[in-house]
Image (tube, rainbow, N blue to C red; front, side, top):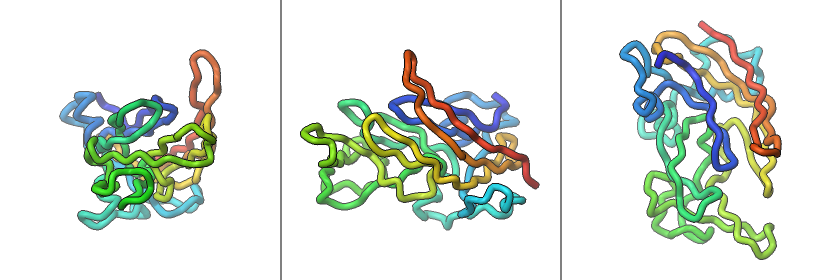
Length: 196
């Protein structure tokens, strides 16, 4: 399809998808689409970001480089086994590395392998083990704490390349919460504006 951004929610998380990478492949985008992407700007001031040139382009093979397009990673969420998640710089929340936090010592913390997807327990949940798949220490749009989770926007401003590969927009999440009910639903406030 010919689209630029999409929203998806599951596993008590929400995802801002771009017409790029794994998402473009899965949704069968047209030949004139699928060339999207996303970058952080390092700014939380929506008005101060005025051009696409303000995006931070990561070096090749850097931690952020794989997340300039939608990529599949594994995570422990509200399930017994790791599940595939579609992440980009907006929702790449930071995997811990190394041993000693309740995850396998061989894990590189990248989320690339289902076998190495770590399980970090947190003691603040009483006797119940809580599996938290991320550190929330990257350029993501929100942090999440507690059970049920509370979401706090980081107010990062992102540059999104449209699916046509030629146009750009700036995007900022300024509010998010989970409205409980049947069914539960996320309520988001996203600011979006085309930039040169």
